Length: 310
Ligand SMILES: [Zn+2]
Image (cartoon, rainbow, N blue to C red; front, top):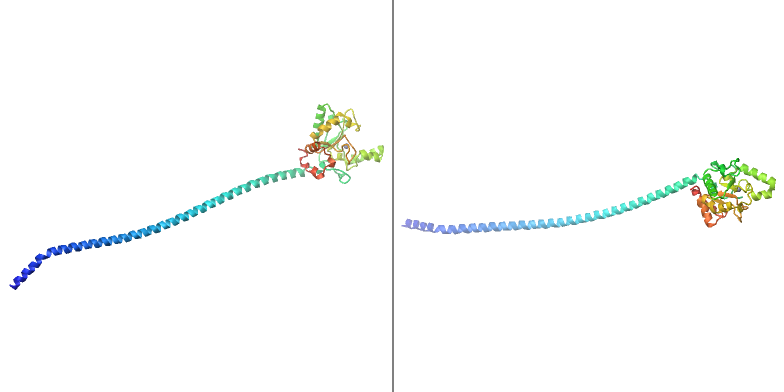
């Protein structure tokens, strides 16, 4: 009986077990799911948070990198601007330098020209400054006989001045104002002999009045000539009464000739026949400003030396 009861009870217990197991299993699974879900959620949210932090870090890094890049770009821009300014400054310097080189080469050219130009050609001669007795012009040329009073007595002049002289005399002839050369280049010896001859003929005092001492004579330069007319001949006095002289006073400067000793000059007796070549530029200035060569400052005159044959 007891055994029977027991077995029935067991049966009873056994028959009541299945629903309890099912629920427990369900709960267990549900809890498992929830747990797993929560865990997953938790781990995912942790992941997300971590990712977000990472993203934030990344963003911050990126922002910093952008800032650094911006700074670098700005620095590069500044550097570029600086380089551009430097380049510009360099170009300006280069331009200035080439201008300097250009003006220097002009100066060098002028200095070279000046070094080749005889400074005596524009020198004032006086008892303070006179020409060395050994001085001779660099090159002399014979004047075309057409322009000479004495056709058979050759006269010479500085080779560079010859064209100016002959052009002037051609122009005078073309204007029906014939002008002839009586005397041009005279050496120291010739001048000395001439002076001695004058002294013998006219006496020392008279000779000193109209013939320069050797060494003071512009004729020794080869740049000076005494002019006359076909009718005036060898008589120089009276040349200033001729139309040819008047023509000279109006036109000689265009060919670079000036009257060395005009009326009233303090340096020497009036010599209307005696004309000296000083170059067109200086002669023109003197003509326009009504200046006398010997009254001018030697330094002012010297500025024209470089242009004497221009
Ligand atoms: Zn003379």
